[in-house]
Image (cartoon, rainbow, N blue to C red):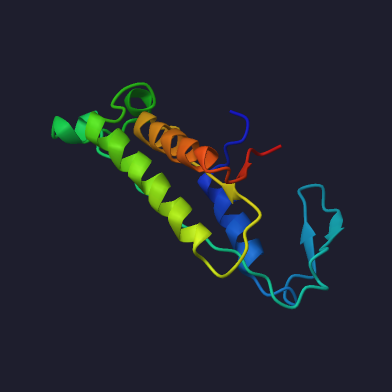
Length: 139
């Protein structure tokens, strides 16, 4: 699926973004070519990372554990309450970044492929869009 990163790739990306610029001199790809880090001239890198758990799912309501990817990627989306929770989380996030002292250039939203997580991410991102918060789409 385009725009979706594996958890391992996301963790590596987070590590690169949060590491000191002086400790990252080069990155090696699978082809063993050295890539120059264009962040070396930066003395202070600032990123913020936020985590959001999915809203109440239909599996939560039914009191079942839905962890099988063959099932959870096609069933057990959000309940009405879960959709409202995701919407409120988006509104709250918009309020927090608008009142922050640091300017932001955009927000990237990543999700697992479980239905409950995809629906939460979509509703959350929709709230950001309504407030004209730029969203990174992986392009």
